[in-house]
Length: 204
Length: 262
Image (cartoon, rainbow over all chains, first blue to last red; front, side, top):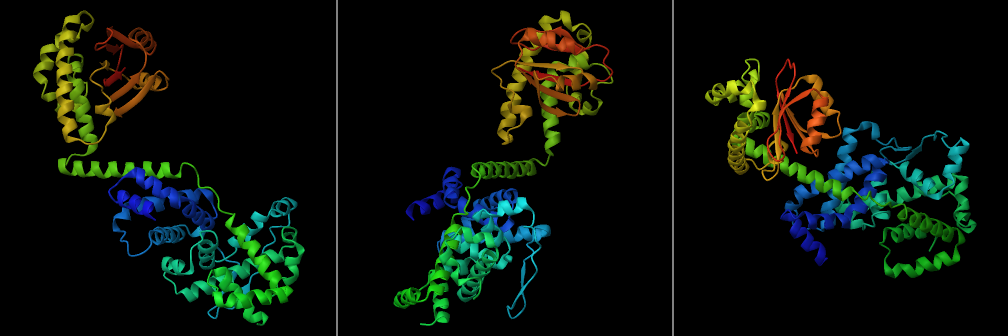
């Protein structure tokens, strides 16, 4: 990406216009990652700002050894993790816990869907999907968002998170499966996808 | 290929790592097995919908970031310059304000109770103050004196501003909002009540407040200013368009500095 390379070079010299253009290339992915991780637009905006300020302050340290996107997303992932450490109340309480053998133990889901208002809201596909993603533990959610919202490759995710490709693959497939199961448990979901898709059911 | 093998390849497919050599078998199984096909279709739609969850970031995100960066850079610069000077910002600012206003205010502050805390600054000008103390008792009649003061003041401000501009890289409300090419109106004497009234008046924007010194900005003309300030109990001693205006407060129990920048 020639254009990106020149923007990086200018940003290293403190050119704010170039840095602004550079931000525009990444702001959507950064903001959406922060939004899905924190589940809160206000926090997402705060963290996104923090991420870009850190990026501006550390862009001089970027060596062309790895992709710039990896550099950006590492800052992004670390900033979100720092945020979780600082704000324990935001910590996700996963609805699935993993024991050491990665055996899945489902917790009973508190029935927030009971009220008619909630049910009405949840007939929206996006909301159903968002809820299903929110139910993932942070470890699963981060790989899922990077892959299926950010469009990162397995290798890049492995670089960003410092995980083996195998671990990324395994977390991804489990994340997808959990979301699929969550959606299938919700009867309303069937109305969004044509019935032929439902034949497979929620079972493995 | 059985369903278990298909399931493995299904994950490769959505990971983006399905080998080309296996895609034929993969597709073949899907055509033969409705259950696997349904799972594939479901997952595909689910992931397509996931990608659509991407929201537009707030339109002011970049603006906020750049503003924050500029702010931090300014802060860093100031810290550096003050480290060099080894003087706290508040002290420098206060001294500068007093320095600028002293030429005009000294005659009016001959009273012992005035500006006790700033005595040090005034000590430098002690001679001048004593000299002019008498004229300060009747400044309304002292238009010639004003003109002289104005010249001295203007020269002093210009000198000081250029001196301090060289040394201080920050942009201070106190100093650099004083545009030497336009008029500003310096003056004196306030008490708490009148200043709060002035603060609440939309015609006046408070630029800075340090100790007993207040600096306001106004768009009012000299005549409007005269009327307006009279309402607040400021006694107008003298004023003229495009020159320094003096206002004094009747029965003031506490002295301070009020400067009004037009």
